[in-house]
Amino acid sequence: MRVVAITGASSGIGRATALRLARDGAALVICARRADRLDAVAAEIAAAGGQALPIVVDVTSGAGMDALVARGIERFGRLDVMICNAGFGVAGAIDDVPPEQMQRLLDINYTGTYHAIRAALAVFRRQQSGHIIIVSSIVGKRGVPYMGAYAATKFAQVGLAECLRAELLGTKIHVSVVLPVSTETEFFDVMANETGVPVTRMLGPRQSVETVADAIVRGIERPVAEIYPHAVSRLLVIVNALAPGFCDRIVQRFGRKPAR
Image 1 (tube, rainbow, N blue to C red):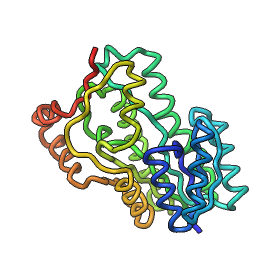
Image 2: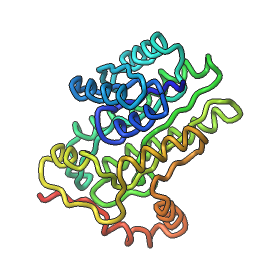
Image 3: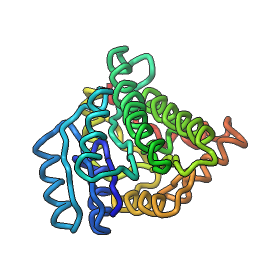
Image 4: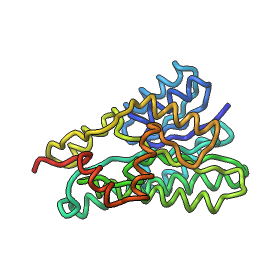
């Protein structure tokens, strides 16, 4: 039985991945801040054939993430995978994003990832095995207009993953970063609410949460450094590396501009 912890598991990619793993009989340690939503997902996991331990915790708390991992070990005896998924976005030109909002993005998207990784690594080093999966975004490889604050946190996640992979090379502890394109979740509605004004919908490719969840599960079964649920999006990364100025013109159409 595989034991997997997932942050931000009450909706979107986190929920879809938990349910996908539950169908394989996994044990899920799921966390979020909304107890009612978390309990609903736990019931769905049980109905799908998995086991669930729902824990209300804020990823910005290092002690909270340590306790999450400890409770998972107490319940299931081990931890095989930590999926760092909690996060949110805001839209706007970088000089329109208030400093306190930028700090909150960093606290949840980046520092929350750090706390989850740090808590899991203590167990993985003892076990001499484990898998860290960081759910970033394609904008963590190539930024788009009016998403600079969010993209910065996603780039930070990618940089952390790259360093960890090099540090853990030769061990049985794997590190993967997931790079989805725009995904059909409540992310957009939350972003508009956090931004405070309507936000234009991004043009370009989209994918379902089930597509991302399937890609994550394939990455768990056969660990790879980078997981692209939308395979063609890898071309954007290649074009940006070869011709960043040309890529600037390509991504102009993909921005999410607030209606200010």
